Length: 493
Ligand SMILES: [Zn+2]
Image 1: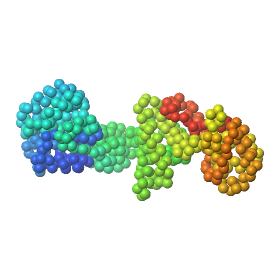
Image 2: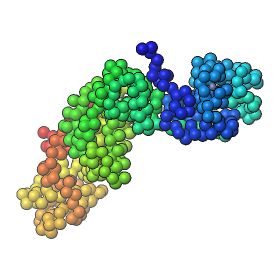
Image 3: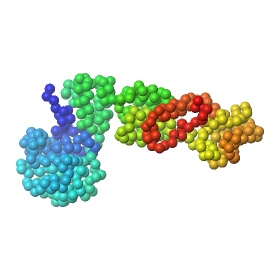
Image 4: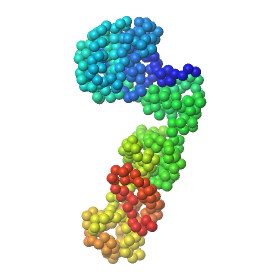
């Protein structure tokens, strides 16, 4: 077949072919049919969503000699065909990114006073208009204040905020929105059917998601996929081509993070591979977290894969999302992407709100070095009964106060001798005098008994080992102290 890039071949040629921009199209058709023509239009929105395509359709409609239904360009008259072929004399397209200087603008503006050669209007389309220099903007502004009646300006920009308010106020602003995954999938389905390309629904969705709201990107991604898959698109192959991990991988990853199962997290990563798109994996994980958070908020059942996570603490989800977000920027800094991914996921475990809380329970020694409860428990010199009682306590130090929190039933049987025994053991170990406070607000997860019962020790050991092996670690952590890996000498061996 004669090869024409899909995005160009399927570029909309009239308003009815524009996809996903209903409001903008309605406003423009109305402007054409009511002959309420503005002298400047400003098209705004992210890249690849059809700003210049729609501007071109509008230009055709304004100059068309055989307008259909009073709104649509005919695509057959001399003016329409010359615009379609890029040969129109009265339709001047400029890319401000390459021609932004005052001289260029001056040359351009000098042609404004001449009447159009064969059409009703002389139309100037300036793409990426925010790139113009301030001098160029000023020259342009003069023309916008009193434009000759035969001149129409069309501006397109991805960076609306960089445009002077005085320019904006003289334009009819047409804001184009990102196109939804559903609309893009439907459009791809139609195009693929016409192109006689086989596909399954899930591959359409994968391409649409990867396109992030842009029909043009969806079509250029499709080009790549179609040639790899030999015009027969199946979900599995499309995933491979686009480097999109299976949803189960992402779900298992999140589950392991929530379980604080470092061994499993590392094994998932090893299986996923060192050479895959690690940034994409992190983004997919964040997408899943976001989906869960939204479902929790909406309080309604959703996809099966999300139902398993609905009971997760919302604050924890927010924490994981924030941490993912703040680490995404590291991918562009040239570090090894696999290390960044690994360290981000380990951080999600090490710095989770529960572990942060753990870090706040520190005991300061006289020389200002810090140790953590319950790490020091086995170093205390205690007799059998006192030791068994203290095993069930959580401990917090505030200045010279040491607060010992026990379960209610333990606190009620604790006698003065045992208290003295415990107090002496702390003072001997810390080599300082302390004021002791007792209460029954024990945090059962911060007791030596809990520590011993749980594989927590194993988790910390694993984190520490992995972190020590990674030379990028300190840079990635951005100077944060890794309090959670501090632990007692005896536990380490
Ligand atoms: Zn026409």
